[in-house]
Image 1 (cartoon, one colour):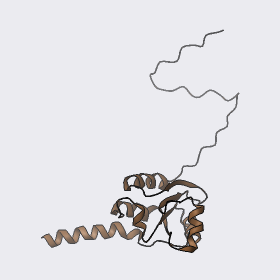
Image 2 (image 1 turned 90 degrees about the vertical axis):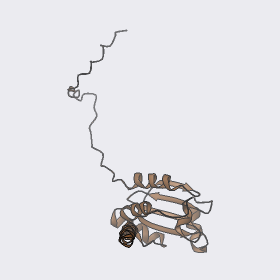
Image 3 (image 1 turned 120 degrees about the horizontal axis):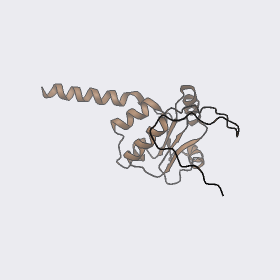
Length: 163
């Protein structure tokens, strides 16, 4: 029975981790992939492994699942001389950091220089992965008709006083 419970727990862990087992190391290629997939880019900067960015030292199943479902992930290693200029341009100066882009890959929606807590990173990833709603085009004019009366039972504001 214990073996069955262990096997079930292990399979859930593998399912949570498997959506994003691949990390890019080529920033340009990852940026192109993010635009093609309509996903934001998650750039982790550290030394050795991407887990070093998180204060806890490991990427949880929840964090890995969020990254796998909604992001194209890039890991830039500070020990790689070829990547140091890019890391500097991204504004990571403390040896570790996270940069999240918008879905078009044109803007940074989040930047953190240094190590970050998993709780904060999960919160930022959820915000960055939300689809952006297209704003409604509205025509604003001094002569536009007044908005339709609301159906709420709120008391109308008092009339304006004349000067």
